[in-house]
Figure (tube, rainbow over the protein chains, first blue to last red):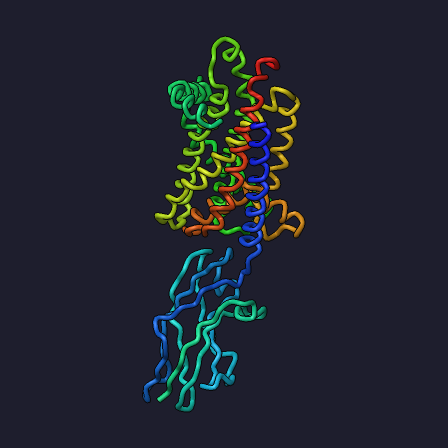
Length: 150
Length: 259
């Protein structure tokens, strides 16, 4: 009786563990390739009168299983919006990325061009796989920075 | 169930060490290079595979020598340890018939003695990493985790096989075929991404795939593997060990009748 009970417990525990195993397998191997955490060294970008552009440091944490690099057609870029979140320009200049290995991070200096008119803006930092998609379209979180042009 | 095993383990640990030492000594007895073969073997295999796949099949995998050796080391340990564990009880039958020895010491000692080869293979891998100018970070020390997961998984399978082989000797021959199939279902020399969807599912379920993935993240990319990958590697080890012990425990009294 005791032997049968232990066998039963062992089988039930194994079935439970196999279920967890399968869930994690699916989550790990089938997770999106477009999984990169974007952070910056500033929370807002301010353009002085004389500035033609500003360089900010963007940290990218590659949480995917693939190598990110501009050799693989992946670039850093941003979208420009006005203070009411209306789109002004979607395709802004690209910043090339050197290799970021899976589950590694790297910091890239990114140049932001000064908008032609003074006022408040919002820039949305995003990644793009050229000719394929923007990472935000695949559910990856963007980085939103308030921008002030004097 | 577990306590007698733990007590027995401590009581007979000197015998276990003796078994492991004997295995290592017998393996390299009368060979000129001796233990050096544990280093040379993976290095030579890696060289052959790198030449074959980079010239004949024109593989475009980055840093192929480290890629192939990291996978081969894992698979080779599994294949070698389970194979020798499977034959361990049959091989020790003369001793079992004469004196009382906890029978699980036989498969355990075989798997432990193969760990020596695994450590040597990792040294070879480190040499290849340095030679190919792969960035070696402190994260390489995490190699202890895939080793542990692999040890648990192999020990469990080894114990199951050592019991079954006594009752059905055909398993010894069948397992060779199964290992060949297992090798092709393990991404040793191809990336998972090139597989069609239905094959990919099978290869992903294979516990060796995740252990190799873990090893490659550490060695090729210097990364810290995510927690979920640790769980993916650990679960098959725990299940196989639990089943291995259970099957062995429930069949060991009948071993003597089939020797």
